[in-house]
Image 1 (cartoon, helix red, strand yellow):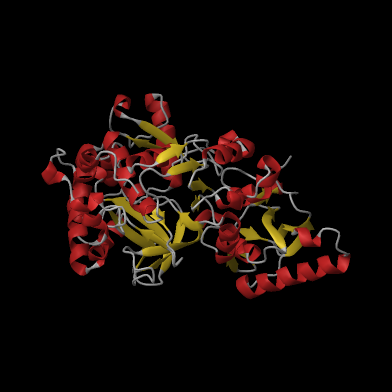
Image 2 (spheres, one colour):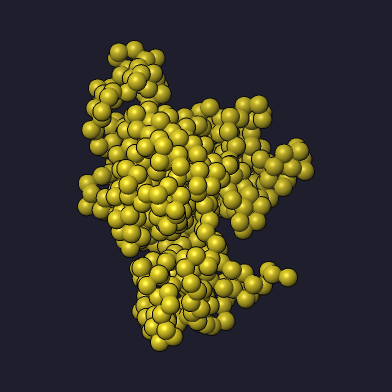
Length: 484
């Protein structure tokens, strides 16, 4: 593998120096190094020690003071909550007294700024619009999209943390990367393109919006070594590759497949299906966090840059972060005071199980797995059920089923009048099978659901490719109560 095209320039970005020989660390020349940033990543566990937490807490207190002094939005929010920075003396004070910045708070900030300033970037934006360099957004599937903004420094920070995650998959300078995530506004779109370029890779930015045929044709012509997309889209490419190009997806020569944006990439059955079809190593990505070869959760390669909290999802009480603990994940950037739209206690509604003990892969950083989302939780006869858990059961039955399914909701969640209704595509082997074979398949799915989730759903079997496939994040809910 050839060396980085301009090591001195990269040193200016990674180290913040002037690019002189003294600023260029020797490890930048080593393409076989285990970490993108050897100065930081091999020391990540230090941030979890008592001394590391003390340093992080000291930084957080400075951040609270700086944000209070420089953001009229946050001064108003903290004053309204009856708290001044000096009153926050412990992590418990911070968790108890500083209000969460959740999705509804974010959207309200956007609505207020649209009315007050004529744009929907939020009242917490504290710089002139001319200072911004990139605007991204969520999909808005559960309401209006929420926007995230970057200035030049923010883009550099994004590049750095994404590069740490991508390096761990084996992506190296000079590799060709076929980008199959949606490019239009999504965080996994243009920001990831920037990050691949930052680390010296060559991006082929087809994007999910271009459609399956165009993406496969470009893959056939340009011979990329890396593919990025959602796991459901990767499965769809398996189905469509031969029809579009006359070749199976495994003949394209992909070495690395990076999936994300939805559950699937960490499910052993899905990983096995993708690995066997693509002939590639499979990695699951969630923001700037990446799974590993041991598949023991997402490694947090950006530890030390944020303050983390784990909350009881119902009471919002603080839970201790320890190996195996579960709760709603809340973050505060320790450099928030330098950001263009600072946020304290960001809560996007993800439920994590965290792992603080060393990983079998030997790589650094705490790990976590996603249990589900607070607003996706269903309650069936008192049992809490998350779509990610249903996905795991269904994907575990491939190839008896295709993996495509829908959860049918006749009333607004979370309460579901039992039984929970599921539409599930059966696999090709059941095409033309008699009723008894279908009945046996339904019984098997019900039994697996009961063993794993303690529910017995009502299952409607459908032929393969009945359900729409999405090139973006797949939608598992069919909300009949919203249909007119």
